[in-house]
Length: 99
Image 1: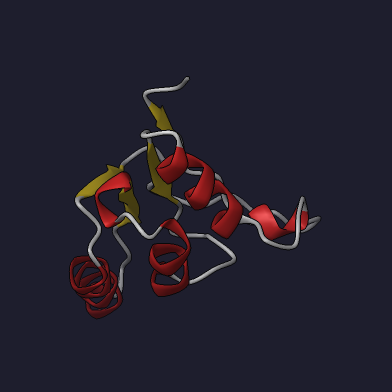
Image 2 (image 1 turned 135 degrees about the vertical axis):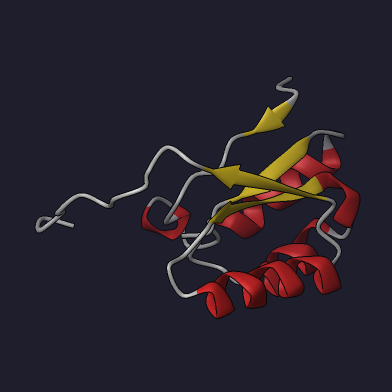
């Protein structure tokens, strides 16, 4: 069993429940899920699905718009996420025209 489940964006492209199913599996198996900033489900809905907030961490991209970053951090805190994982490997986003 993994120690934690790494953040993966757009999980609903693979399955309709996406991050909700991943959160339930993590909570049921006593491991941690890191929710991607680019998730297809909201922080709030993922918390409800997990039903065990201590099993959730939130991956945070620091945005140029600091108020957006602040809002994400506040939502994660209020919703019960236990940790923030700061992403620093993408200071400039690439052009992804096919996406």
